[in-house]
Image 1 (cartoon, rainbow, N blue to C red):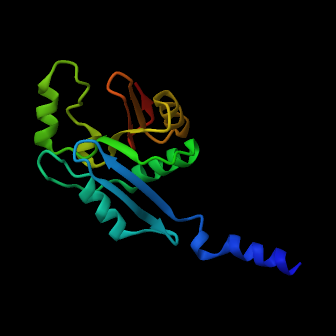
Image 2 (image 1 turned 60 degrees about the vertical axis):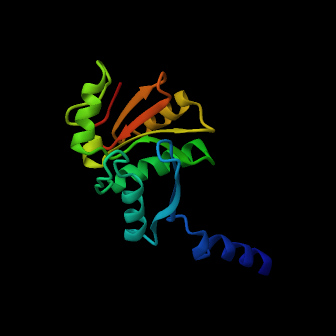
Length: 167
């Protein structure tokens, strides 16, 4: 009985808390990595959120914007649901208005919206090295927590915290 209580104690120890949320990223344009705890002990960690905001800034202009914590929660749930051990490979996150306009006019039919959720820190384009792109898309769709765009030719899935929709 004593051993059972010890084992139960280990499973309930604060260091094993189930409310700790950590994400890892690799930015495909800057070649930088970030691993950060953004939520623990029942609250968002402001230092972690600041690190993520700086990391996901517009790499073209250096402009930054707060990132919607709900977007991070969607990514966390995707990671848990897929059992991925890879960092999220970031293709695009926050975009400044200037960058968004430049991308909209760069080529015809780019799929860059005039009022993109990337402008508000509510969208990210990602992939996971150990999860097939169709599965990543399916998991994101199943969550029903925002928009999901599938771009197999460009090898990424768009996830946002807007209304539930898909393309």
